[in-house]
Length: 357
Image (cartoon, rainbow, N blue to C red; front, top):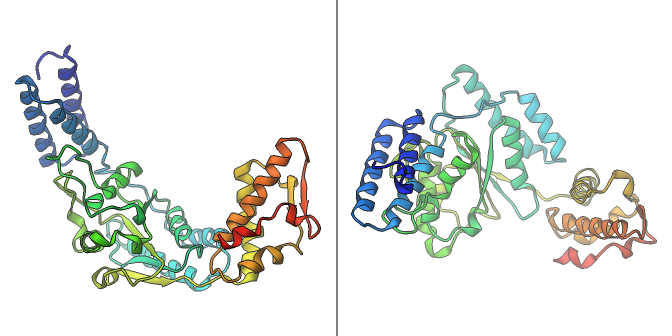
């Protein structure tokens, strides 16, 4: 590819070497990429536009980033999984039991045949906002020692966001599924398909069709991304979906999912979650020490009761975050060294309008 002192020739040589050095790339795909490099070199030589080289560079760099033969080793300890579930989520025993049953089936299968592919339907958490759907997916990834990636379906414009844009277009790019796998650097991550009911109504049929291929274990071992233009095996990926309801999910997709209905939290559960989980997390994020903010026991019911209509803890999280911010500001400006929230001073720090936000 011409004189290596030429910047373009140097780039082509770098891409060529990357293809040679990456031994895990399937040979047929490697040859296809070499052909594209050769066409790009000829195009540049005869005055072609730089867009061909730009897309070819993006293509080669991407296929070299994909983890063709790389995956993390699963932690197959069911006791560890239960410990993580209990430490990060209060209550919800039926949900936890169903997750542990799912993991137990996977663990037993892997113990008997380490190379086996999990064929059980993907988990699908259904419930209103704040009931723990997203956090359960992250917990499963941590329990298995797998990489985690969240794809918000509310941001998907059309099916090409999932399937990618062809290299023949000037805005060519891989779909978000393969981008997630490349980002994780592992071919067996946990990928969260978050809020699947929020897909663009104008392209719902196309997105549901792509999801059918992505989630079906009989099809996803040769998933076709339009940018890659070569089958990629998704069978090692653990997909987990969430949704507020199932009304806008196609029947065919639902058939590939194991629905887990998320229950509402009681006031008593919200108080414990607020004390043991949310407040500590918000204080850590704001840099507060444990001795710089305390909330009296009698205050917690007054914080939680106005939120009683809400099944989850999203408003409680906003409320506690607001309290922590106010306390942090007072400490930083030197007004106080610490705050003990009581019934007498609570409304100096509590903005109850957040309860209905």
